[in-house]
Image (cartoon, rainbow, N blue to C red):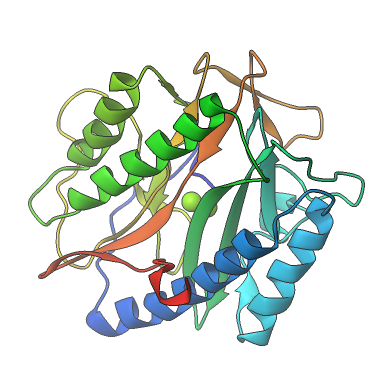
Length: 264
Ligand code: MG
Ligand code: MG
Protein backbone atom coordinates (compact mmCIF):
# COMPACT_ATOMS: atom_id res chain seq x y z
CA UNK A 1 0.00 0.00 0.00
CA UNK A 2 1.09 3.53 -0.63
CA UNK A 3 0.81 6.89 0.91
CA UNK A 4 -1.35 9.10 -1.28
CA UNK A 5 -1.89 12.83 -1.42
CA UNK A 6 -3.90 12.98 1.80
CA UNK A 7 -1.02 11.20 3.58
CA UNK A 8 0.87 12.10 6.68
CA UNK A 9 3.03 14.95 5.44
CA UNK A 10 2.70 17.38 8.29
CA UNK A 11 2.86 15.02 11.27
CA UNK A 12 5.92 14.38 13.39
CA UNK A 13 8.25 11.58 12.37
CA UNK A 14 8.42 8.82 14.98
CA UNK A 15 11.77 7.50 16.17
CA UNK A 16 11.82 3.80 17.02
CA UNK A 17 13.85 2.17 19.79
CA UNK A 18 16.02 -0.86 19.06
CA UNK A 19 13.31 -3.08 20.56
CA UNK A 20 10.67 -1.57 18.30
CA UNK A 21 12.88 -2.06 15.26
CA UNK A 22 13.38 -5.68 16.30
CA UNK A 23 9.59 -6.20 16.31
CA UNK A 24 9.30 -4.44 12.94
CA UNK A 25 11.96 -6.82 11.65
CA UNK A 26 9.71 -9.72 12.66
CA UNK A 27 6.65 -8.11 11.07
CA UNK A 28 8.57 -7.55 7.85
CA UNK A 29 10.13 -11.01 7.90
CA UNK A 30 6.62 -12.44 7.64
CA UNK A 31 5.95 -10.13 4.66
CA UNK A 32 9.20 -11.31 3.06
CA UNK A 33 8.27 -14.95 3.59
CA UNK A 34 4.86 -14.35 2.00
CA UNK A 35 6.36 -12.56 -1.03
CA UNK A 36 8.92 -15.37 -1.47
CA UNK A 37 6.10 -17.92 -1.45
CA UNK A 38 4.25 -15.86 -4.06
CA UNK A 39 7.39 -15.63 -6.24
CA UNK A 40 7.54 -19.43 -6.19
CA UNK A 41 3.80 -19.85 -6.82
CA UNK A 42 3.12 -17.35 -9.61
CA UNK A 43 2.47 -19.22 -12.88
CA UNK A 44 0.06 -19.13 -15.81
CA UNK A 45 -3.46 -20.25 -14.77
CA UNK A 46 -3.27 -19.18 -11.12
CA UNK A 47 -5.97 -16.74 -10.04
CA UNK A 48 -5.19 -13.61 -8.08
CA UNK A 49 -7.62 -14.75 -5.38
CA UNK A 50 -5.57 -17.93 -4.89
CA UNK A 51 -2.48 -15.78 -4.30
CA UNK A 52 -4.43 -13.64 -1.84
CA UNK A 53 -5.54 -16.71 0.09
CA UNK A 54 -2.02 -18.18 0.23
CA UNK A 55 -0.70 -14.86 1.53
CA UNK A 56 -3.35 -14.53 4.22
CA UNK A 57 -2.96 -18.15 5.33
CA UNK A 58 0.83 -17.94 5.79
CA UNK A 59 0.50 -14.56 7.51
CA UNK A 60 -2.02 -15.84 10.06
CA UNK A 61 -0.01 -19.03 10.60
CA UNK A 62 2.89 -16.79 11.68
CA UNK A 63 0.64 -14.99 14.17
CA UNK A 64 0.26 -11.78 12.19
CA UNK A 65 -2.78 -9.98 10.76
CA UNK A 66 -2.92 -9.00 7.07
CA UNK A 67 -2.64 -5.23 7.29
CA UNK A 68 -4.46 -4.27 4.09
CA UNK A 69 -7.61 -6.30 4.67
CA UNK A 70 -10.32 -3.77 5.48
CA UNK A 71 -7.84 -0.85 5.32
CA UNK A 72 -10.13 2.01 4.19
CA UNK A 73 -12.40 -0.80 3.00
CA UNK A 74 -9.89 -2.66 0.79
CA UNK A 75 -11.45 -6.10 0.27
CA UNK A 76 -8.31 -8.27 -0.04
CA UNK A 77 -5.25 -9.17 2.01
CA UNK A 78 -2.93 -8.73 -0.96
CA UNK A 79 -2.77 -6.00 -3.60
CA UNK A 80 -2.37 -7.64 -7.02
CA UNK A 81 -1.67 -5.42 -10.01
CA UNK A 82 -1.16 -6.94 -13.45
CA UNK A 83 0.57 -5.29 -16.44
CA UNK A 84 -0.90 -1.74 -16.84
CA UNK A 85 -2.24 -1.90 -13.28
CA UNK A 86 0.10 0.11 -11.07
CA UNK A 87 -1.01 -0.58 -7.49
CA UNK A 88 -4.03 -1.53 -5.35
CA UNK A 89 -5.50 -4.17 -7.68
CA UNK A 90 -8.20 -6.26 -5.99
CA UNK A 91 -7.80 -10.08 -5.87
CA UNK A 92 -10.40 -11.92 -7.95
CA UNK A 93 -11.35 -15.52 -8.60
CA UNK A 94 -12.02 -14.55 -12.22
CA UNK A 95 -8.59 -13.11 -12.95
CA UNK A 96 -6.10 -15.75 -14.13
CA UNK A 97 -2.43 -15.04 -14.78
CA UNK A 98 -1.22 -15.52 -18.35
CA UNK A 99 2.23 -16.23 -19.72
CA UNK A 100 3.99 -12.93 -20.41
CA UNK A 101 2.14 -10.97 -17.69
CA UNK A 102 3.88 -9.14 -14.90
CA UNK A 103 2.17 -9.06 -11.52
CA UNK A 104 2.97 -6.65 -8.71
CA UNK A 105 2.15 -8.10 -5.31
CA UNK A 106 2.10 -5.78 -2.31
CA UNK A 107 1.63 -7.22 1.17
CA UNK A 108 1.50 -5.82 4.69
CA UNK A 109 1.37 -7.34 8.16
CA UNK A 110 0.42 -6.13 11.61
CA UNK A 111 2.44 -7.98 14.24
CA UNK A 112 2.75 -7.15 17.95
CA UNK A 113 1.46 -3.65 17.23
CA UNK A 114 3.83 -2.83 14.35
CA UNK A 115 3.54 -2.94 10.58
CA UNK A 116 5.54 -4.57 7.83
CA UNK A 117 5.14 -3.54 4.16
CA UNK A 118 6.91 -4.71 1.01
CA UNK A 119 6.17 -5.34 -2.66
CA UNK A 120 7.70 -7.09 -5.66
CA UNK A 121 6.80 -7.38 -9.34
CA UNK A 122 6.99 -10.96 -10.61
CA UNK A 123 7.21 -12.15 -14.23
CA UNK A 124 4.72 -14.85 -15.28
CA UNK A 125 6.83 -17.16 -17.38
CA UNK A 126 8.82 -15.51 -20.15
CA UNK A 127 8.25 -11.78 -20.53
CA UNK A 128 9.21 -9.44 -23.37
CA UNK A 129 12.32 -7.25 -23.29
CA UNK A 130 10.36 -4.08 -22.48
CA UNK A 131 8.87 -5.62 -19.33
CA UNK A 132 12.20 -7.22 -18.45
CA UNK A 133 13.93 -3.83 -18.52
CA UNK A 134 11.07 -2.25 -16.56
CA UNK A 135 11.42 -4.78 -13.73
CA UNK A 136 15.21 -4.57 -13.70
CA UNK A 137 15.38 -0.77 -13.63
CA UNK A 138 12.60 -0.41 -11.02
CA UNK A 139 14.26 -2.88 -8.65
CA UNK A 140 17.67 -1.29 -9.21
CA UNK A 141 16.21 2.15 -8.42
CA UNK A 142 14.93 0.78 -5.09
CA UNK A 143 18.34 -0.68 -4.27
CA UNK A 144 20.07 2.63 -5.08
CA UNK A 145 17.56 4.46 -2.91
CA UNK A 146 18.16 2.09 0.01
CA UNK A 147 21.89 2.99 -0.04
CA UNK A 148 20.88 6.56 0.78
CA UNK A 149 18.99 5.56 3.95
CA UNK A 150 21.74 6.96 6.17
CA UNK A 151 21.43 9.32 9.14
CA UNK A 152 22.14 12.89 8.06
CA UNK A 153 20.85 12.42 4.51
CA UNK A 154 17.56 13.97 3.51
CA UNK A 155 14.42 12.28 2.18
CA UNK A 156 15.17 14.05 -1.12
CA UNK A 157 18.41 12.02 -1.39
CA UNK A 158 16.25 8.87 -1.48
CA UNK A 159 13.90 10.46 -4.03
CA UNK A 160 16.79 11.61 -6.22
CA UNK A 161 18.34 8.13 -6.28
CA UNK A 162 15.10 6.64 -7.66
CA UNK A 163 14.42 9.47 -10.09
CA UNK A 164 17.96 9.61 -11.52
CA UNK A 165 18.09 5.90 -12.24
CA UNK A 166 14.58 5.62 -13.68
CA UNK A 167 14.77 8.69 -15.91
CA UNK A 168 18.31 7.87 -17.10
CA UNK A 169 16.78 4.66 -18.42
CA UNK A 170 13.94 6.42 -20.24
CA UNK A 171 11.16 5.27 -17.90
CA UNK A 172 8.58 7.36 -16.01
CA UNK A 173 7.93 7.76 -12.29
CA UNK A 174 4.39 7.72 -10.91
CA UNK A 175 3.88 10.93 -8.94
CA UNK A 176 0.42 10.48 -7.53
CA UNK A 177 1.52 7.84 -5.01
CA UNK A 178 4.51 7.89 -2.71
CA UNK A 179 6.36 5.88 -0.07
CA UNK A 180 5.97 6.62 3.63
CA UNK A 181 7.23 6.28 7.13
CA UNK A 182 6.00 3.13 8.87
CA UNK A 183 5.75 1.93 12.47
CA UNK A 184 2.74 1.49 14.76
CA UNK A 185 0.77 2.97 11.84
CA UNK A 186 0.92 1.68 8.27
CA UNK A 187 1.42 5.15 6.83
CA UNK A 188 3.39 7.64 8.91
CA UNK A 189 5.37 10.78 8.17
CA UNK A 190 7.47 11.47 6.25
CA UNK A 191 6.19 10.97 2.73
CA UNK A 192 8.87 9.41 0.51
CA UNK A 193 8.25 10.61 -3.06
CA UNK A 194 10.08 8.90 -5.90
CA UNK A 195 10.93 12.27 -7.42
CA UNK A 196 12.53 15.41 -5.99
CA UNK A 197 10.12 18.19 -5.08
CA UNK A 198 11.58 21.47 -3.83
CA UNK A 199 14.18 21.68 -1.09
CA UNK A 200 14.14 21.25 2.67
CA UNK A 201 12.79 17.70 2.92
CA UNK A 202 13.23 16.05 6.35
CA UNK A 203 16.62 14.79 7.48
CA UNK A 204 16.96 11.10 8.28
CA UNK A 205 17.97 10.11 11.78
CA UNK A 206 18.72 6.87 13.54
CA UNK A 207 15.49 5.08 14.52
CA UNK A 208 13.39 6.23 11.56
CA UNK A 209 11.81 3.52 9.41
CA UNK A 210 10.71 4.23 5.85
CA UNK A 211 8.86 2.25 3.19
CA UNK A 212 10.46 3.15 -0.15
CA UNK A 213 8.32 2.11 -3.11
CA UNK A 214 9.14 3.17 -6.66
CA UNK A 215 6.20 2.79 -9.07
CA UNK A 216 7.58 3.03 -12.59
CA UNK A 217 5.85 3.15 -15.99
CA UNK A 218 7.05 2.30 -19.48
CA UNK A 219 4.99 5.12 -21.06
CA UNK A 220 3.33 8.13 -19.48
CA UNK A 221 3.73 8.78 -15.75
CA UNK A 222 0.01 9.53 -15.60
CA UNK A 223 -2.32 7.15 -13.79
CA UNK A 224 -6.04 6.92 -13.03
CA UNK A 225 -8.25 4.91 -10.68
CA UNK A 226 -10.74 2.39 -12.11
CA UNK A 227 -14.46 2.39 -11.21
CA UNK A 228 -13.84 -0.24 -8.50
CA UNK A 229 -12.43 2.69 -6.52
CA UNK A 230 -9.07 0.98 -5.97
CA UNK A 231 -7.21 -0.30 -9.01
CA UNK A 232 -4.72 2.30 -10.28
CA UNK A 233 -3.83 1.92 -13.98
CA UNK A 234 -1.56 3.78 -16.38
CA UNK A 235 -3.42 6.26 -18.61
CA UNK A 236 -1.85 4.77 -21.77
CA UNK A 237 -2.33 1.13 -20.67
CA UNK A 238 1.40 0.47 -20.90
CA UNK A 239 2.98 -1.71 -18.20
CA UNK A 240 4.00 -0.57 -14.72
CA UNK A 241 6.19 -2.10 -12.00
CA UNK A 242 6.32 -1.67 -8.22
CA UNK A 243 9.02 -2.70 -5.76
CA UNK A 244 9.02 -1.81 -2.06
CA UNK A 245 11.10 -2.39 1.05
CA UNK A 246 10.74 -1.22 4.63
CA UNK A 247 14.14 0.11 5.73
CA UNK A 248 15.41 1.30 9.14
CA UNK A 249 18.01 4.03 9.65
CA UNK A 250 20.59 2.53 12.03
CA UNK A 251 24.03 3.44 13.35
CA UNK A 252 25.39 0.78 11.01
CA UNK A 253 23.63 2.14 7.93
CA UNK A 254 20.45 0.99 6.15
CA UNK A 255 18.78 -2.12 7.57
CA UNK A 256 16.35 -3.72 5.06
CA UNK A 257 13.70 -5.14 7.38
CA UNK A 258 11.78 -6.86 4.56
CA UNK A 259 14.81 -8.52 2.92
CA UNK A 260 13.92 -11.84 1.21
CA UNK A 261 17.53 -13.07 1.20
CA UNK A 262 17.02 -15.52 4.06
CA UNK A 263 14.23 -17.28 2.13
CA UNK A 264 15.71 -17.67 -1.34
MG1 MG B 1 3.16 -1.85 0.21
MG1 MG C 1 3.82 1.02 1.37
